[in-house]
Length: 159
Image 1 (cartoon, rainbow, N blue to C red):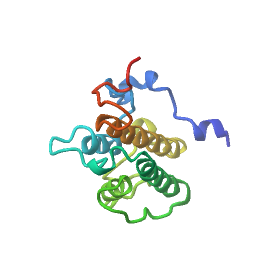
Image 2: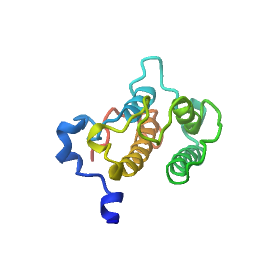
Image 3: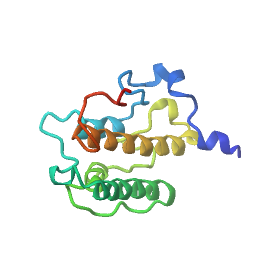
């Protein structure tokens, strides 16, 4: 088996514009990525993460983001259950989102792999891509909350 085919998305984001690239973020859109962005960035009810008391606690923010990425990684790579966590933590937010789904399996009615990537040789690559996007979205949420400096709506920051 060609490992390049298994480990790489079928095309760069620029090549898949008709395949659901969000022009504002440059991310290939999936229901999982859209739901996470809606929860953390575009939520009119308020941003659930990071909690206000952690905005200046960089080590705790890092620990939460690491736990979230590790859990998603272990779910994809080892089919391990996502551990329970506080609802206010990064892991708790992802855990609640994925609770009723079969993610990372495909087909999954809640969070399907987009058609362009549903060929079995691309599904694993796309799920890995979603993990990277999840990390990016959590980092955006941290940045927009003022973590690591002044908050700004620009992402990535300019300059």
